[in-house]
Image 1 (cartoon, rainbow, N blue to C red):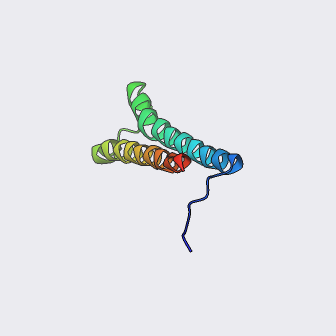
Image 2 (image 1 turned 45 degrees about the vertical axis):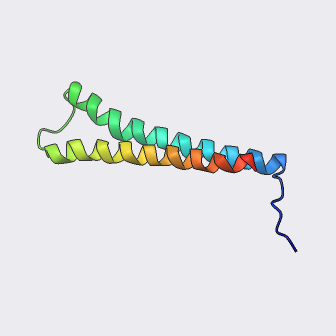
Length: 83
């Protein structure tokens, strides 16, 4: 017996799109909070002077990379729609 790939129903396709949108939006939120907030706080002088420069540079970089990873995962999920 052959294993045939069944086409996805419209409901399944919509679920995939919603999950991908959710992941993409979480990635955007992580980037906004983790990257732009520290930059704005430094510009407006709201950061504590005792903050380590490594933490100030590493935290936004980590959040940026996490945001990119979530965005790529969302795109990877959408590849299933072509079935």
